[in-house]
Length: 172
Length: 280
Image (cartoon, rainbow over all chains, first blue to last red):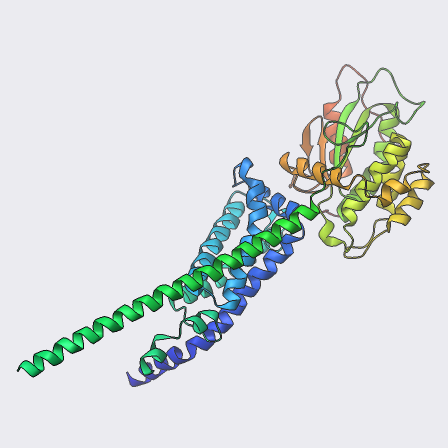
């Protein structure tokens, strides 16, 4: 019992530091994905279209807005600003992507995910493989986002500067 | 007794004040956090809009392209003297990207057959170049090459375009390289008879139109290149990939009106590629 307790308290103590890693990983991926699409928004629109999930009149809006949203999320996560909100939004967006890729896979569409630019048709046996890896990556990021939303206390964050952690305040 | 009561009261008051202070400070923090978040979002959106606006260049269309942004090559256009008047040509459409290696393989497999059928007037071919592979070039070669082809067409007509199209595939750059420069594209244009296309090529005159054509193709469900239509229907290798030569021949044959003679078989019957190309 005491072993479990210390293990747990160690994780508790280390979490604010581990959270930095989670923020950098998830935020970094968002920044990379957003930046890759920003340079070629038309290709982002085509990638959205290839999923055949978004109604025609909205394809362009979604294609253009997506990279901006991703960059915003990336900045918030990396900076550690409004961390819980950013982590929840990140988890929701990842869930949407997972559903989108699964739907493309289930309907037998042969497309690239367009996660980091590109997108559109793909073919060959590696399409299914690519879907699997895309989903695995997004699930991993979703788990990290969920952890950050659950415990949004992190060292070296703007939130920490603005709002010192409760246990620190109690001591003051 | 009364002392204790007083102490309790004082403690409650103190606790109340502490709670008020905490609530006020929490409100302040939320306000500050909210403002910074809003500022970040506004900045990102403003920067994004600026970037998008700088990329948006809606351009003029070259005179003589089809309503589907294609170049229609016919026996007439090639001034063929082998054309048969008895034939009703089958309409063939190729969506291609000059940066696409699978398109080059496809072209090298079918070009001989296509050229012969074109000159017999058994088919017409509408080439619809699109630019979807800019990410495999350091200089947006997909867009530049397609725009250069428009310049050649504008300057010297359909036969020059037809030759230039073949030249572009023969000179296709490696993926992730800069590819041919604008002046190299101009030199190639001169070789096919478009002597004054260089200012158009170097001025990027048709790049906006190429983006529009690419967008239109995507709206028409063309998600990859090469995409081949025969008589309006997509032709594939049966597995969703681009067709082999024999798939194209079969489709053209099936679409040929039975009242006329069947299309000629290609001279020397080029052997179809056995490797299975995948789409880019």
